[in-house]
Image (cartoon, rainbow, N blue to C red; front, side):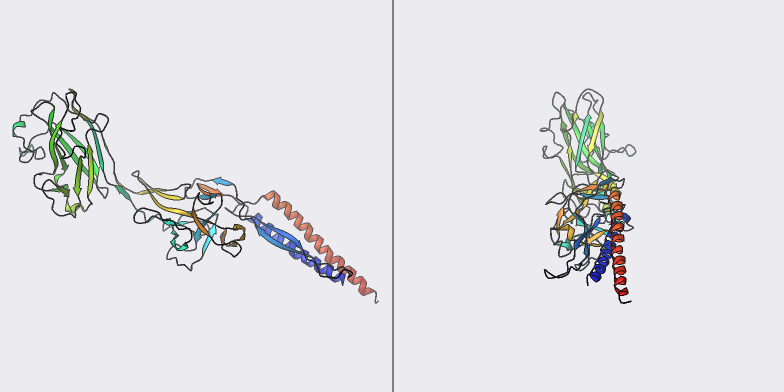
Length: 468
């Protein structure tokens, strides 16, 4: 009967508009949810099958909810360096636990990038989901994989600890006074038996240097060490005796020919115009390669002319290039006061972690208070053939479905994946004015469907009254 079909059509209208109301309600409730994607109910007709001459029977309406996952919300600037947004396509890969991940553990995908450090140093968003990425390996490289999800790990910054860099280069800019009075001890000076390194005014040993330059260096653990360069005016014009030694001498162990912490000895020679004559200088065997080669503390006893860090220091070996002629001016010999213009070294002492920065390519960099920065991971970005086909789950995240297609992991800014915007969050795609308009339309449609049922009921009652 057509009256019955009209009543059933009204019921489908109530059900469909209830579903539309639920979608609008979800949108309004999540207007301030970071990375939320609005939903919309689309209506379609239901048609009853009938012959060409049959009486008309109402079919009704059905509603299908569509989520606009590919729509991008407006970027919102924040003050947190770990707030992230993706400018373009792609999703952050997240997990519900940070450690002991297995291939069977569920991975989710989200645009909600409000990440912050938890009490274990992991990056976790407000929904409790942990950010995944490729970690730096033992060689300091980041190896990415577009398809192996087990290669991804939760990004942790607490394991970075402190950092230090050893000194590998020293550059000295100083002047030695050309009219320096010759030392009365010059005649008894001997770099092996009576050296500047042996000088001790209390004991009356060694030869007092005419000028000294102290240089701070950092060992492989960031420990502060001191290297001193001593100069003694020679008997010949433009010629100075020079010794390089460690202070204190107990910081090193030396082989035959080196005493009291000596590292090298020889002549520093200048040209008549006061510039360093590198070819005549004998402080290093190879003037083009002036290297102080410290062997590791654990190395065997040094041979003749060799040296190593003291066993008690427990540090690694290092080569330090001592550049006396490459600075602006370098070592000069003019008839002015002997003084140090500048001493430049690389390397830093031990530093503690002070900040985390993430760039647009997803590189996570640890910043230390000694000026060192170190890459520790790269954030992975997942893309899908049909992102709108993903299945929504709690925590404003999504999971793979047959409609979405399989994932591909990419680095930010490559292969169609968007760039990462640090200190930025993606706003919800909900437009309140549009949602309130849909709310009014849905309410009216629901009321109209209820009128269908009321009218059909009245007509059915009239039919029943015919028998009376």
